[in-house]
Length: 457
Image 1 (spheres, helix red, strand yellow):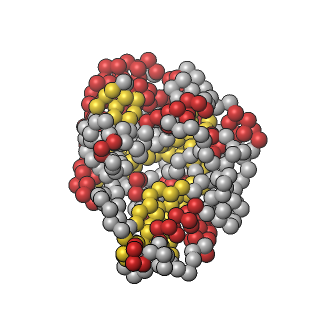
Image 2: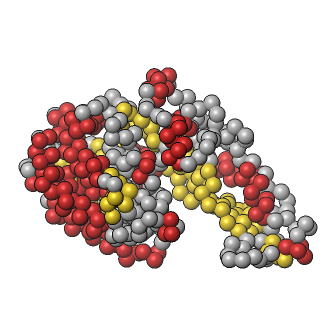
Image 3: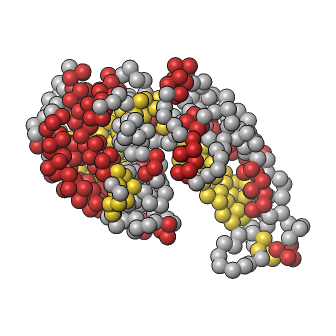
């Protein structure tokens, strides 16, 4: 089948890329109500393409927020079923001025497609639609497939849990297949076997009941921005350790066998620093960069504001200061517990001169996929065929909260066949996705289906 896949891709690659460009032109930003109509338009786009590819019972399923696109092709109830998950919503493109080309006008430069959502997750999700198209056109779909493509992943998948709980029978499957992660590189393919969890909160520090003149009141009235800055700074010590009491209590040690595997992962520290234009690495000194970004928990300020930030000067002593803070979690940590520990500690370190409010946003639990699963072995074998190399199992520093949700509600493991690269700048200006990676994903996915159906029979 491999030769047929490559020939089909070669004959249709221009069309595949043009279709992806059309999808990328739709600014489906779920976080901004200004783009509400565009998010719905993207859902309709996916519905149409699934129907064209040969999916049946395709529908745009309403939720309390943005819809979920569902489709299926059941070839034989006795055969295994693969549930493909992806999302069609994208991150905001701000700041627009940092893009070298408009974020919703995709362009190809140096072998990459540049646009918001190119890699996360439109490009990677669309690989599955085109891989399915190939299997349908060539009569080579070896097992059942269901699609569940949502429009709220970038805002926490608030309504996905309700949908899957209400449709457990409809979504019944043997494994979930996801492409929303990255790999080490084209020369060193990898499969994600772990994800960090997430606890995301917003904090607000309030001082006086209104903004004040900094000359008249400064020195006597506490400045909420100054205090917030000190409070945030105290959340980590000089070695990068998080100072919240109990934060590390549930962190599991990485098994020795996995630690040895980590050492084999290709990594060039100088290239890493040069790529980011930084002189040194931060964080916990006793851990490697890979460990810091995959198997260790973190705390980061994602945004901070207060007072006057307009043009010119305004000598104001602000009434309030706020920040958004995220904590990446590792296996055995729980987002609710960590959020409560954070809130209790953050309030405890606030001086009497201010009031503190902590508002939890969304979270998700960490996940680890055993490499001895048939599903993982089927994916590994697919990469061996398409890349000519055995993929390295790696843990990702990112979070896909719904992976733990799928396991909890549907009882299914997820295989994360990501084809993006760390250099794709997801969530940042100038996001991109390699044309080679896009086409290689389309090539590899049908091989997974073939292997999985054979190994499960």
